[in-house]
Image 1 (cartoon, helix red, strand yellow):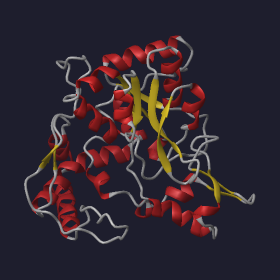
Image 2 (cartoon, one colour; image 1 turned 45 degrees about the vertical axis):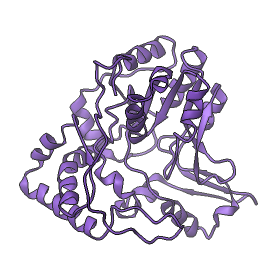
Image 3 (cartoon, one colour; image 1 turned 90 degrees about the vertical axis):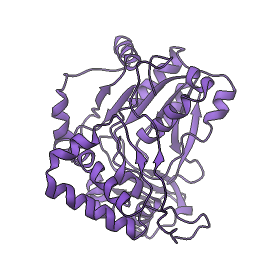
Length: 336
């Protein structure tokens, strides 16, 4: 759905560029930021990318070129740009649409390297590393320069949550469901697990007036084919892990704060109210787990020298991230 909307935005002349990510041509297991100017380039970025990615790498270059553009990214990418737009008038005027996916967290590359190890491969041998697709979810497909082909099912790759290698920051994300975006797309698998391949259905959340106008226009143009409306609480069944994480965030942040770690300032995302729905025992377990991980340095950043050594847990004031919900009073009508 995000790919189709990106192509539609360019072809309808609503924007001149799409900022997103795609597989690296030189290292296909890795993802790179991409700016696309036509439908073929947008299509190059189709498909899920599990691992580190920096879609905002060329953001200010687009702004300096005075091009109206749309951003497709993770909710954290969207939140960062919304915040920056409040102090960068040019960015605010040129950023026309922000589209996101429901995010389960960004895994590090060790998860993908483990798949290569399973087949005795080195990253330098790869000509293709497609995480999913050709079906929903489809297979993880691996091809090498000398013609070898390997596949891994979605369940084989992701059934063991302990091996996801999700970044610690993702475990305290207050907005994995993209509340700051115009439109959000997500999988809709019963219980959160794909029973088998389907035809590629997406759930869609339309969050702003700008998003509603875009969605309705894309449907009218035949770009999207719409199924039945889904009551929002039904999404709890399709995305149960998002419900669990959203309810846990406030307790986890409290545990980090008690351990002396810096935490983001979160506003308007209901995390306190949702935490109370878990009960005090569950909330305390989340608090204690985050406290212990923070004391071990799990939420610190690696030293920027290529080694896995961690910095000590910093002690100091909280770091603010400002408002994280669209504000109808903002000048562009879409909020920050």
